[in-house]
Length: 337
Image 1 (cartoon, rainbow, N blue to C red):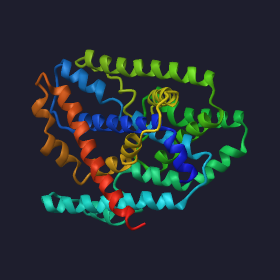
Image 2 (tube, rainbow, N blue to C red; image 1 turned 90 degrees about the vertical axis):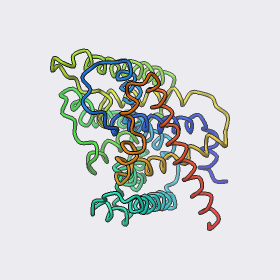
Image 3 (tube, rainbow, N blue to C red; image 1 turned 90 degrees about the horizontal axis):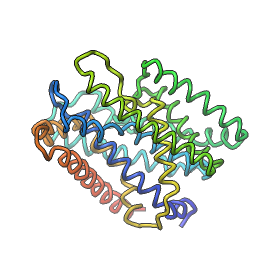
Image 4 (cartoon, helix red, strand yellow; image 1 turned 180 degrees about the vertical axis):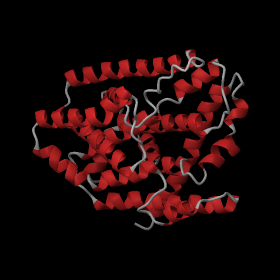
């Protein structure tokens, strides 16, 4: 057992957060990728769906913060990069074959990106792989500057890439290589800062800021619904990758789970180890529209009193299926190591 394994086993609280974060992503995709047509009436189901589905970008922030928290003090291993690439490539090929088998219309560039692992279809996979390869550089910078200087760097970059765009409501695209790389780098440094310099005072500030941010997000949703016919639209504060409100929410949630005491759970850690693949499988653009609008067809349940249960249940089911598939892949591949 290596050092990295020991750390993971002692952090089932953080591993549980990985699982919950992926469910947040699935709930968000249920909301934004399902076609509901034109909704012109505020209803309990609409508001409930918006509340449940508002956190997918927050979850992405949490994933990257976790990475910085764990890896700032660890030795970089190319073996881990190869594992990420093999996972990305494997599921890219499998989903491509599934798309062909289902007779789906597949764009030529989707085929190309599925066949070449360095150009994955999923924006998160692209950005995460770029970040991971850069970890030695980030760790060198983080460990060579003082606490105060690292804090200053984080504040300046957060202001440029999060605060200003949020205040002026001109969000930069979250899917581009360069923008996502910088925002992922900022989140990595935040996780590293918490690991190196976190204390009770910082935890308290982070949790309070997170709670206030959650309230702001919920208020923004209600504002949009109340003023649906007046053109007074506020962009949902968590729905963009560079929302400072979403970032503060992620930091607050991470801090809460960091301080929860959960003994090592093999089940939690095993499920958490499949979350990256869960994202790759269900959010592959080759099948995402087919999954949400041909298989799930959430719009058929929108007026049902059980709609929100359907939303949660479907998200859990997709997670479970994808998680089992990845567990089988890991189990089979482990026989060849």
